Image (cartoon, rainbow, N blue to C red; front, side, top):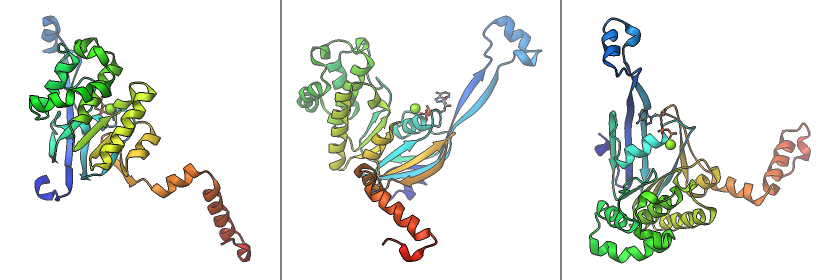
Length: 276
Ligand SMILES: Nc1ncnc2c1ncn2[C@@H]1O[C@H](COP(=O)(O)OP(=O)(O)O)[C@@H](O)[C@H]1O
Ligand SMILES: [Mg+2]
């Protein structure tokens, strides 16, 4: 159904997707415990189906940037993992188009025993690149990551900031059509974050689609036109960021206070004095 519903400029269609996880409470491991469990309810393991996402539908068109918002535990990462194809929905359908770069969790797609450079090749091949093509990109990836001579040491020795730098550099140099970013840019220093933001903006100007999770409202508004807010796995709100409204706020209080004065005057009981 998602297939039929997709229009030509859609790159992500999430169609009535639900995801539940099975939680095993009170897991009894001893033989004695299991034996007692045959007679006593309290000793029995019980299984709960936890609903991380319930009936979520959304679509993202080519070149759009959608922010996923919501408190911790609301299902943002679960949804991104479903879009990335890392998790399967329990019900509902997902349809995507184009090369998706998942910047989802530190180190996803990296083999800890391999060096940074070997992981560049590994990731490149996962994206469908040939070795010769990757070889041409390696220098730029290494330079952007600022990993220097650490690039030929195993990534298991990397700090979280180094993981992020490599992951981001690989993802953005492999020319993704869709970038999924899950709070990943919060790791690392301010200068590198700035560089990542500039790179994302550049890729967006070239038509890249973005699905973005961040706790920083400023960052979200900088990149995204639209947002969807999740609460306990359900979409409770969606909307558009007003560019003009943002500009007003940034320009200072002049325009908004003028507007307030006008409103106050208009609603006062001296209509003749209303400022226009
Ligand atoms: N693999 C899993 N097994 C069980 N529960 C999970 C698993 N992954 C996530 N959850 C639960 O699903 C809910 C949503 O998690 P998540 O998508 O990570 O939220 P967010 O990214 O918005 O903080 C949380 O309550 C979390 O504990
Ligand atoms: Mg999360």
